[in-house]
Amino acid sequence: MEQTAAVERSDLIKTLQKEQETEGYISDEAIERIATEFDVPPVEVEGVVSFYTQFKRIPPGKYHIMVCDGTACHIIGAPLILTWLADALGIRDGETDENGLFSMESVACLGCCSLAPVISINGKVYGKLDRKKLLKTIREYKKAEDSNGRSNQTQSKSTAENTGAAE
Ligand code: FES
Image (cartoon, rainbow, N blue to C red; front, top):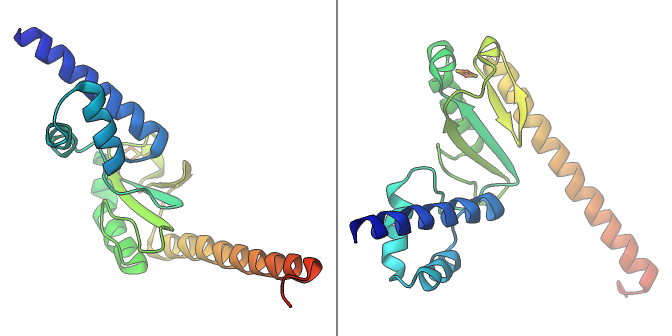
């Protein structure tokens, strides 16, 4: 009987991991759906999600920043990286900004310790960071985002003008 409960819990965890892999986080809807699937109350699924730090309840930003806090990076400045990012983005570890643009998460070793301290943004690695290099990188993402926004606005304006929708 206990073994069945353990198997079900491990299946539940696997399902939650799959959900997070696909969606990037565990939404309220997913909790409800998975609870129905496993025939357990949603509060039980919520309990599992909050117990394991691997599960996120907030959607990640468009640019997800992983700050390595493995031993090499920690010793050489990961806590400072987290502080500088928090100041630059207005979010703390595990949060997403209000525009849904940046999210930040400290993680264990990213596997490139010789480049410490290291972050990755959507999988792209930036190493040997100091404050200047870090802030420059963030500024570049913000700038690219701004010009994307501007070109989208120009595009919609010209589409609207071409279709006469602006009149
Ligand atoms: S400890 Fe940061 S990459 Fe290994």
